Image 1 (cartoon, rainbow, N blue to C red):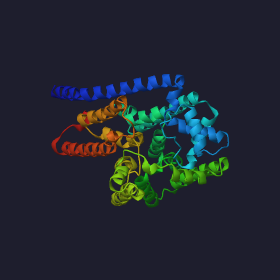
Image 2 (image 1 turned 90 degrees about the horizontal axis):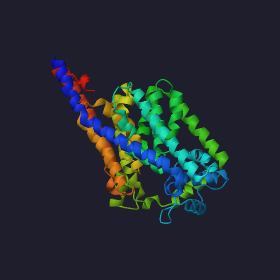
Image 3 (image 1 turned 180 degrees about the vertical axis):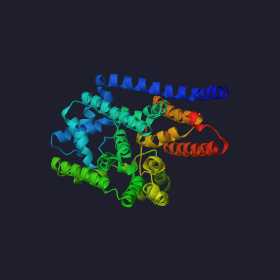
Image 4 (image 1 turned 45 degrees about the vertical axis):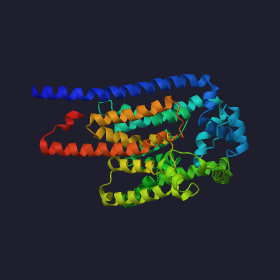
Length: 403
């Protein structure tokens, strides 16, 4: 009988966190459904998002034209419905990312926007499912926090590629031991936004050398070399045009709500090296964190902290790039026994959705809190898990019943 009472009390503690997760998931489902149903009917919706830059790039590639031609991009994007007050977008992903945009050159704007959004949604949900399986298919609703994570929703709404990058890192986590060559191939997706993974990349190279995971390195090299060769065949001038575009589009003048950019704007707006200073320090710290653990390093257990640090200290990162934090946050959510922390994570995602509904621009500093919040939450969740495990060993607390 005492065990039944304790179980009932524990179940009562579940309710408010489960309700918040259900609310956030429900809002996300409604938002995504309305978006996907409206997208094929509203040309201005597709033309006014980041997707139009990918579509315009595809149009240029399909016609064997320069995908970084400013005048051509202005004509195509404004003709597609991009407001005159908006800055014309370019694909800032490395040139090998052009292969993703090429198919969009053979479809219309609205059809392309719908197919692109469905592709991004599939990448996101596939990542969440893979992580759920990676953690042993726990019989609870915690993974719905990841499925309804607001930064991933923003990727879907504006057509950003961060959820594609998320899929690449998730596949790496799933296969780096059992299928290292395929895991290396999957890292190609992470190279679409390499600036988000610099400390992770430093640790990855060190881990490959220590563990002699040369098949994984071979897979990454093969994928990158093949894509570079394909892009060179598609557009031999792409590399030169990309370098010129990056020098002239004025990224240093953009208001990007992230730690590195805010630091540069505060200290010396024109000193671009300041944007890379936090990343450089984070790389050194990450290597120092890895080295004592090198012989027992586990990416699923130890990689979360480095991943969140990489996101926090990236040279530039938008709110939608927070989607790559999902593997670490889901790990913390599965580890912690604190229903309060789960509720806080759901509320944080809900707060971002509220900011979107209030039409707060993605360049606003109102989103600056997100990356520090994910790191702080992860540290609290993993520390609480460690503390409760210690209590379980010392005081007989049945933490397993609180999953």
